[in-house]
Image (cartoon, rainbow, N blue to C red):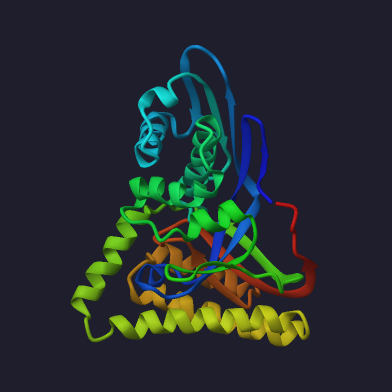
Length: 292
C-alpha cells in the first residue's frame, strides 16, 4: 500500500499492459504500479509558504489552489508551510509522472485541511486534467492503490487480487519522450480520417485487455500457456499503437531489436511516441511485489 506518515507520502510510478487510449472511450485497461521508481513529498508546518520541487516547481501552487477550489475551501485553508517534492519518475515516459504528483498533492491537501481522505482519488483525477485535458483516472487509481488493476471509466478500478505471480516483464527506456496530450490528439486525428475503422481498433485493444487478463490468470497455473496468451495480447495492443501512428521509425527499430534478442512480445507503455518499452521474456515466474 502507499506509505503515508504525518506530513510525507511516497507513491510509485505505473505502467500499462493494455488499454491505452481506448480507455478514454469506455474500454478496459490493465495497469500496474512500478515501485522501482517513486515520487516523495514531504511537508513541514512553517509560517512562510515555500516549495522545493524537482521537476514540478512551477505547477505546485496552482495545483494546491485547484485542490482548494475543488473542495470549496478558501485560500486561507492552505497558505503556509514548506513543501518538498523529489521525483525519480521521468516525464513523458509513460510511467505516470503527473499522476504521481497529483496523487501526492491531493493527499497532502486533504490532510492539511482535515478533509475526508476518501476524496483523494477523485481530487487527484481532477488535478491530472491540468496535464492531459480530460484524465481517464487510470494512472491516478493504480498509483493511489499501489496494486495491479483492471480499469474502465464506468467501473473504475478493480484490483487484480488473484495474481500471486507475474511473468518476466522488463521495462526499457526508449530514450525518446512523448507528451500524452499530443498523442491523444494524434489518435483523434487518425480517427477523424478513418471513421470506418475507429471502433474496430478500440475493440481490438479491449480484446487485448481480455486476452492479457486471461493470460495473467492462466500464468498462475500454467506459466508457458499464460505467457503465450499475454504475448498475443501485447502484439494486439502494439498493433493498435502502430495503426494510430504512435511509433516513429526509430521506435520501430528498437522494437525489432528487442524481439531479435528473444523477447516474446514488446509494446510501448503509456500514450506513445516515446517512453518505455515493456518486454515479455520467457522465464521462471517471480513473486508479485505487494509491498506498495
